[in-house]
Image (cartoon, rainbow, N blue to C red; front, side, top):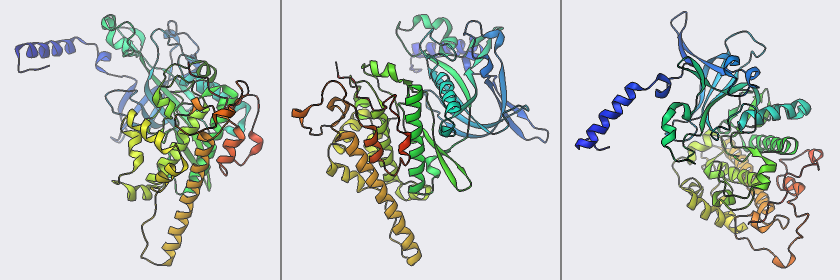
Length: 463
């Protein structure tokens, strides 16, 4: 729109007029989030979350049963203010009214990608709510996994009063009749406003105090990943720095795998070999980045864990370590630049042990201490911790990329393999115990290995 021209000025005036004719909900007004004045003049924010009890109704008949639980926001955790995307925001809150849920909850407010006319609460189309409901049932049956995955307290699709009727808060609702002018298969309007209240409230990995704590947290998250896959047939597909958190109680620390918004039914993923690319760029597997015609499996998520460990090893585990690496150039920066650069760099770095050593040489190293033997001894301990992390990443790379049980088409690198001894068409599987051995001491409980569903079943051959 060029307002230096007559046409541009006319378009600009037309835009202003159209804005004036918009309803409140079309301008982004959300009455379910309110600013309130306190008794002593202290302001606070309230937010309404759809109650789970009303989630069973279908979208067309849910209006009469739509009820919400009001929470008081006590702090903000995540604010994704990008122009495009899911615009995810996370808040720490407490219930306003006296209910059975008295503790703090994490409220996740986002615009989830949902196909048009395929929005049904607690169905496979809604994604995270349905997945978390299923995962919570698993935790009830296997309490040993409590705290390693979120528990859904309330949640559903946000609805707004539009001209006296409750309507789904979606891009389609906002655009109204304009949807008719969009391309038939356009996905630009397939976003729906979803809000969840979950417990426990986790802490981000950047608040960890040592490599040893990272090992414990990753161990818990991986075991949660395997349990969700084995018992619920849900594949996470978005392992990243922000999707593994931890909780701390007294001297104990526990890891937690969160954000199932990009998850998928594992059986559907196994049967789908189309070009799907989902996840967080620096941690996505090579085949995921390439949109390879190979079904996604847990091997992709394990590859993401490998990249996460390397990423944390390079930039530092603790806040103090990260301050010392800030501003420096590292090769892993290429993983977050663009897809093409990430593919080339990852394929190169993972293609051999020597290339991986190049990345490991950039792991955090404490500055030379000049303040006495006490600090020097502490620095030596930190160096030893990061050396342990290097050994874990080396073993993981070997298990994922040099494992003859994993078909060559399931790996995005150009590693050399013995093609004369190709495994048979049936029974080719990446060994679960091999992954555990590679991650030792991450997995200490060998009894947790179960056979009913093999998390590392081979991926389908490309078409």
